[in-house]
Length: 79
Image 1 (cartoon, one colour):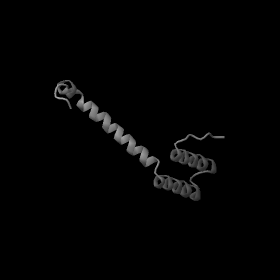
Image 2 (cartoon, one colour):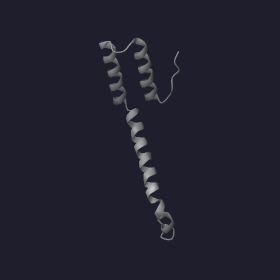
Image 3 (cartoon, helix red, strand yellow):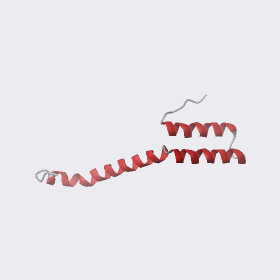
Image 4 (cartoon, one colour):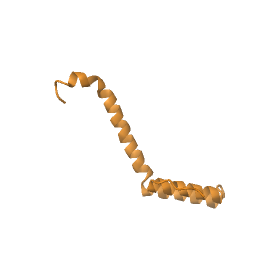
């Protein structure tokens, strides 16, 4: 930091740090949501729900579409 602008920027440093922290958290959330391991776990949970009868075929299809769209980052149209 430039010593001449420090007095003017000093009051804004907490806000700047908070914004950067929010950006870091958002990046980590996106990385976790799009990781293949997280997607695999979600698909396994859906499969377990289907096998136990806790989810109907339509619910399973919708959940699978949501998981795949989360992985690809694209929204898929429902029929």
